[in-house]
Amino acid sequence: MTQKITTKPGKYTGSGQGKESIINVEVDVNEDKINSVKALNNFAPDSLADNAFKKMADKIVKNQSVDVDVVSGASETSRGIIAGVKDALTKADVDFAALKENGKQNASSDKEVIDVDVAVVGAGSAGVAAALAAQQKGASVALLEKTISPLGAGTFAGGMFAADSQQQKDSDQVVSKKWLYDEYMDASQGYMNSILVRRIIDEAGKTVDWLNENGAIMKLVDAGTGGSYDHIGMPATLHGYQEGGTKAITKLIEKFKSIGGKMYFGFAAKKLLTDNGAVTGVVAQGDDSTLEVHAKKVIIATGGFGGNPEMRKEYLGDVSTQGQVLQNTGDGLNMAWDAGTAHHINGSTHYFWQTFSNEDIGAMAKIVGPGWMPLNALADFPNLRVNNRGQRYASETHALDFAVHGAELSEQPKQTEYVVLDQAMLDKIKEGGTVAIEDHYGKWKNHREFYMEFNYPTDTEENIKREHEKTDFTALLNQLESTNVVFIGDTIEELANKMGVDSDNLQKSVAQYNNAKKTGEDDLFFSDTNRMIPVENGPFYAVKFIARNLGTLGGATIDEKMHALTPEGEPVPNLYVTGADASGMYGKAYVDFEGGTLGFAYVSGRLAGIDAAETAKASK
Image (cartoon, rainbow, N blue to C red; front, side):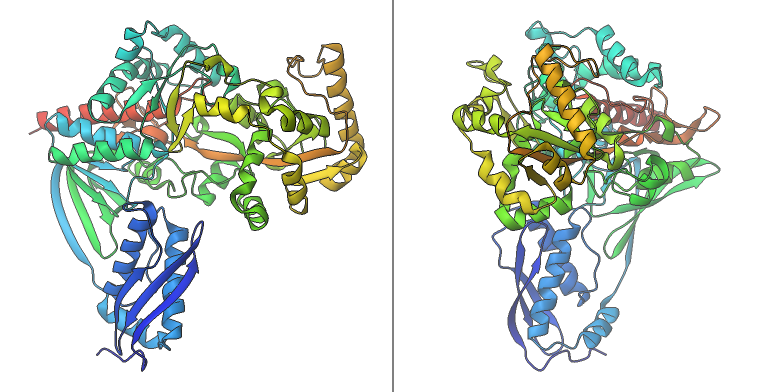
């Protein structure tokens, strides 16, 4: 029997802290139930926040409860919505114990059973490519995704590599496949499945053409246009998203649905169905329903385990930071391993880059709001870098070779570094912009290069303008000195004391670095001394950065057809593993050219989808 929950029916407002802002809600409640939950924020239509609010509001009203699960991929936003609803219900003097009992009465669980040729787990770049390719080959396909909208690493990537796409052929910029193969070999030092690597290289150009034909618009761009200075002059491998990864993957999903594909957002795969060692389907859980998919073939594409702290600690060690995509929690890997797939964690790399910690971002935002973001620009130059012991630890002149620098930083204590600079550098930027320190984009003056990364434009025209903007960083650094990010001292000794590093080490590092610049020879790390920036005129500044784990790559052993393999090297019947869940493309280090990971995701997904469809149809 439904209990009364309040004697004050009506409409009440409340608020809660979301991921980036306060979420405001209006709750309509009568004596025994919640009638509606409405947003008072102006969320962009079909944005993640908008979709998350609709999903959470529906859960709360349907279950008559605030004790509901958060939306995968929007956990902070979901918690903000719950907090806002609780705030409104508190103002209505709601009896939360009675509401909880009513919620139990409203709880229900339905079960749907479907039969398809191919089931794909994960709707990121690899999964969407697999599903679309299989559907186009005439198979019936179900695509399962635990989030409510596309959120995989492919949505924020910049683009994928290829050797011989049609664009490369048309512009006479075909890349040597030997060069690409050698790059993989150099990065892995042989710890790679060479047969797999060779096939991925061969199929990458065809995959770019196929993606363009199906709406994920990609355009060939010059190496280095994304800010990786060391890549300037390398072969053009990157085919950059022209509308951003989120839109590209959304359009691929729409294409998949338009030709009969079944898309299931909000369903988290929980286990594989098996029969005498053969995979026969997958069970997924939604908010209040279970989906049981019987399939001739199953393709796993769940993006690795960068969002799972327990797995990161077990397989990568104590210091590994969280992955960029928090919902990638190793679900697919655990299912593949349970089904008999060989572990291949030694072939699992974690791609690092340089950033601030979430705590430090929060501290800076409290002082200057989004005004802290320009501070990132101070990491874009070959300034002296020291670890948390005050030691210079690597050549600063490849600091913009993000994969290499991120890997070096990951090996330092607490994966922490300090960028050290002086007032003379800041004065030059104030007078002439950052181009007065180093010109990163002038090569493309009157030759615009453009693509989208993290769903934001990477535009050489805008970057050239930004480089020439006269900017006074001194005021910003002074504002942020109270945080654990910025440190200022009139002397190197004072700076070291404020940083909390060994003063003798820091003074020796500064002296060695300055001497290398003066003599033109770095006898420690063999840097390009022409690019080094002396640290001579106080006050002196240090900005703290950490290594951020973008995600994991690998974990399940596969062959060149993306079949999951047992420890004995035999295929696990009917199971494929793709993208970041699959091992074989990398050793520990990330390949040092542009578009490697997204390229493997799309190519491995497409090839798995084709093979799964053809073999499933042949078995009818």
